[in-house]
Each structure stands twice: as structure tokens, then as C-alpha cells.
Length: 193
Figure 1 (cartoon, rainbow, N blue to C red):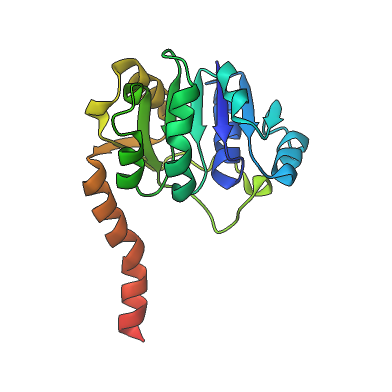
Figure 2 (tube, rainbow, N blue to C red; figure 1 turned 90 degrees about the horizontal axis):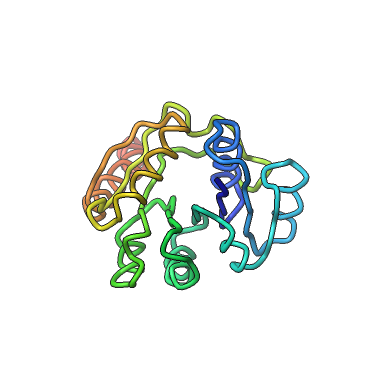
């Protein structure tokens, strides 16, 4: 299997390492606008190929959007326009409602699976990638009923290969829970101060 990852920073690079070491895929194509990220990703063997162009995703079985949420919202319709009906697209954005709206009523909406792996560090860039970043962590898959069964099965297999626990939520429900969890430390700090 070939996976194309758009955005080869901490999350994208860690996915590349984890997916290859688990045997989930044999080839990773990194797509990134940043020339330095592409160079480092190749140098560090995170990817077999690096490109600045979305044209490179046509060779992939699975396309992963691992860029900031605002970028995913803009990119997702373009990616869905470029894929074949047998390809699968997923994202790893931290909020889901706007991303799911971006997939909207696209003719290939069923080929897209919205996800949020609950993992990360304070570091960024390809050099921050860790092969076991996702191991034993939780991931959320949202609005599963809107994705094709085979697309869902591929994404579930991906998270299984990474040894992640999967939970399912509606996108709006996910965003509410994520907001509470991400802001509780700020609220606690403010209250203590």
C-alpha cells in the first residue's frame, strides 16, 4: 500500500514512521509546500518521495491531511476533486465541524473519513517525528455513517496498526468535548491564580 501524507511535520512524520514500521504500508509520499520540510523528511527517511504538488497523491491508496485545521478546510475539497473513487482520504485535524462541512455534499464525500488522533508534543517539524507517538493513545472517528464502509475499514485498520484505541462521535459532539478538555487546564490555572 502507498500512503500520501500532506504535511510532513510532527504528526505527518510520526504517521509515516509508525505506518511503515507496523507494515501497514510499504511506501509513503510526503507532500509539503515547505522545501526544508521536504528535504528533512527525505534525509530522515520519513518518506520515499517528497513533492510540493498535490499531483503526487494520485499514486496513493490513502491520502492523509496532516496540516492545520484551516488548511485542511481549504485543501479537502481540492483533494476530493483529484482522487479516484477507489482512493481514501482522511484528516487528523483537532476540530471537526468545519472540516466535515468542507467535505459537505462532494460527490466523493463517502471516500473521506474524519479523525482526530489524541497525540502530540510541544515540538514541530519533521525532526520532531516519533515512531511510537500514537501507540496506546486514543483516536476519534467522527460522523462514521457518512463514510463508505471500505474507507472506514481502511482507516480503522490504520489505527489498529498504530495500536490506537478508537472511539466514535458526531463531529459537533467531538468539538464540544475537545474544547472542554483543552481549556480545562487554562481554566484551572486562571482559577488558582
